[in-house]
Every structure is written in C-alpha cells, then in structure tokens.
Image (cartoon, rainbow, N blue to C red; front, side):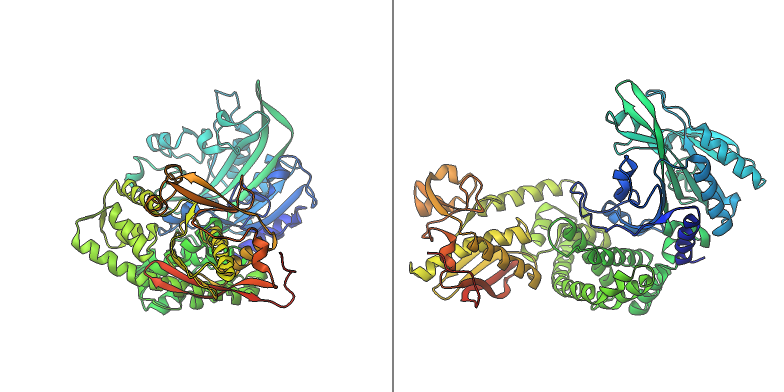
Length: 635
C-alpha cells in the first residue's frame, strides 16, 4: 500500500468513527513564539488538549506535516528524516483506551494489512516516586487483541532502555518501560512536571523487520533498541493525570493523543526498513539517480540527505520561511546548502533545485495543493540561493582541500579563515571534514570563538558601530546621506544578522557607497527589506543626538583605532530614543538633527547597486531619489 493510500484510508477510517478531519497547521507556527517549527502532530492542538474547546468538536483527525531541525545531522541512515507527516487522531474528553487501542489495531491489521505477528507493543511500568500506577489497563487490551489473532502475548518488565539491553525480548509481546520511554508531558518525566501540568502514560506499537541485531547497540535487542530491527509506527498518549502539590490526581475527562509517522507506516507496509524507498520519496531518489548517473545503492547517504532536505525545504518555503541568517530562514538555508553540497559530491553541479523541487511538488499536489500552487515561487527562490552558494562552495571546497592536504589536523584558525575570507559556513567546514576524512582538533570551537570575538572587538559589537571612511564634504546633501548610511548599516544588521561589519564607506553629494562583511550576495528581497526599514525610520522623523564620551569607555565596544583618530574623547551618535536607540554609532559627524530632514523635497532612500567588493565583502551603492507621492518633507 502506498503512503498516499495509507493517509487516505486513515482519515476515512476515523471520519467513519465520528472524527472531524482538520487541516494541517503551518510548519512555521504563527502564534507560538516559543518554537521555530511544528515538530509533532499534537503541537498545534496543545491548547485543546489542555482543556480549551475545539470548534470542530471532541473527535479530531488529521495528517500534520512536521519538521525537526535537531535530526538534520542524523539523516543518512535508512530511517531518520527531518520532515515527516504525523497521522493523528485526538479525543478531547471523549473516548479512551479501549476505543483507541482497538481502533488502531483494527486499522493497522485489517485496513493496512500488517501481519499481527510482526507487531510488538510497550506500556508504562508505573512510577514509584510519584505514585503513578502501572498501565495494566492498556496491557490487558493489547493482550486480548493479540490472543484474538492466536498470538501469545507474554508481558515483560524491562524498565529503562539500558535495562532492555540487559534483559532482552524473552519471547515477550508486551513490554513495560519506565517514564523515560512511556510517559508524556511537556516537561518530560513525572518528577520534572510543574503543578497543574497534565500528563499521562503512553503505549507504542513497533513493527519487527526481522533484521539481525547489531550488538554495538547493546547485548540484547528489544523494541526500543536502535539497531534497526524494530521501528515505532504509532504512539497513543493517554493524558490522564494532573500534578498537584500532593502528587498526581486523575483528570475528570482524560484525553487521547495518537501520533503515527506516515513514512514509517508506509515502510512497515512495504516490509522494507528503508524509509527512502516509500512512494513519497522514491521518485526523488530515482530522479537523483538520473541526474547523477549514479546508483542509489552505492550513494545512499548523499541521495537520502538531498531527498530529505529538499522535501523539508520545499514545505518550509511554502509555509512562509525564506532563506536568511536568522531563525527559520537560517535553518532553511542550511538545508539547501547541505543538499547542494551532497549533490556536488554526486557530480550534480548545477540546477539541482530546479530539477528536483518539481518532482516533490508533483508528489504532493493532490493531497496538499498549496505546494503545487507555489512551485514556481519556491523554485525561483531556491535557484537563486543555489546559484549564490555554488560560488562560495567551489572556492571554499578548493581552499579546504588545500588545507587538508597541507595539515594533518585542522584547527579553529583554519575554520575561521574559511569563514572570514571565503564565507564558508562553519557547519559546512565540519561537513567537508567528514566527507574528506580530515581530522579536526578537539578545541577548534574555542579557538574559533576567540578569533571571532577578537574580530568583533576590532570592528564592532551588535549595538555600536564605527564609520571610518570619507565624506566628500560637509554639504547638506552629504550630511543627509551620512545619516542615511547609519540607518542603512543598522537595517543591514537587522535583515542579515549581527555578523555584518562595516569594511569601508565613501559618501558624496550624489550617493553613498558602503562596504560590509557578508559571505554571499544580498537577495533582492533582502535589499527591499533594508530599503523599507530605512524609509520607515526617515518617515518616523527620529531625533539624532550626540554626546562626548571618554574614549576608554567607548573602546569597550569599539575599535582602538578611534583613540588615535579622535584623541581622549569621541562623539557617540544615537538615532531615536537615546535610552533605546535604533542606531548608536561612534562617529565624527556631522549629521542631520532629525531623520525627517533626509526626506525633504519628497526624497526616499533607494539602493541602486549591490555587488562583491572582495572575498567575503559586499558593496552597496545607494541614493536619495525624489519619488512621486512621497510623504511631505520635514523641515
């Protein structure tokens, strides 16, 4: 059965059981500042699982797209992915264990058609410290279901995962694990929970592929072993308790939260432990084989990384993420760069995204039409990102290879040089070390951080900048552009990140030219953001003030070169509220008195050119141009 069929039959089955099908939530949470991504099926439903009524009712079902950035470095084996779908059904104070476990078993064995003899389950063993009892109720339900299939369901007490490696399976079918494995709350184990926090036991179902146990994971195998024999395909969480000052008390109306990985269920249905061979991913792998002229069997890691990362990146972009150096955008950029690097390893040196993303959108067009609708936009964004990064990749890989050939072990200074001079990301240097089998010193990070701190001290901190470059004169036009350049510098930091450091500036009556550290071309979207910020600050008519400060105090956050240039005292200019300024720079001046003066005559800030100045340094040229319909001038 294909993954698409499994998804459809799951939704249909639970709809027939009175569940309302709800749409997937965005991978980029809109109303949850505590997390960057939607990483589980239940995450968007937490308020309702905690007691808030859901507008669709008490029985819900969906297929939620999920992304877990923390698994990025694990991708490459046959089961780890960063992106996946989680089939989920939820009871908000309605049905409970009997219905949940029986329905899932029925769907799993009768609808999907899995062999009951290949299924194993786990239950909660209880917690003596907090007095939460053993989940014998779930075990009894499972025992009856197995016996109806003519299977003996022996119960085995294992405890922790480590205990499982000591005790082994022992011909068991139902296994009891402690709170580290079979308990759910937002804080983890019962002892870590806060008062009034709900939680409860969970019960997992594992599929047995029958592959030989690898003793490097532990002496004996058991369902939670990582050797690859067993794969978890579903977990029913029974949110039954609330923690109080006296311990745990039962909730009057417990909830059920079930999650089952669609990709894992499809692999079990195929009886193939390689998730990358299921119907949702195999077409991507086949396309990579065609593009590279290489076989998947000989290049599994590279093709798995590319397939997973571009699948994840596509959905992230559809849900509103854009490549950048911050938050979700940084993770998206890293996904794309890793995919491009592994494609480079396969000999795919151009148009990777343009040739793979349409395959991905085609796979999902029937079930998630929003993905196909945004295909052109996603391809255009990714293609631009790929073109920019390939330039960095080629020069960075070339320099890395030289270093690796010259030295037995690379250190933090080497990695910093690649980062500072060639714009080669840190994580890519480590990736390159792995691919080229190059050794990296254990203390590389300490050395790298020290060099980075020294560079920042020489140049700038995030809050105080330095303008060292020239003003052609002190005419009104030059002064306006000088203040505008301060606004632009702060805006660049806001958009691109605090790694942006001024490398030089030159201001005439016609234009400002500004050089700054940044490893790649600034995108048109980013330039537009910078323009919008600067023009907004001009429109806000912010005050521009300065005061003299002792050079020694100023040098705590600026370069020592200022002492030579300005003597014992320096001018510190602030734009905006001095207590919380938009910009705070050490500068000799002069500047306008308030930013509205920059827009006099209906003028607005406009970036006219962005280009490379040198390796790792970009150059922007900008002007103040008169715009029809611009705001009334400030005087």
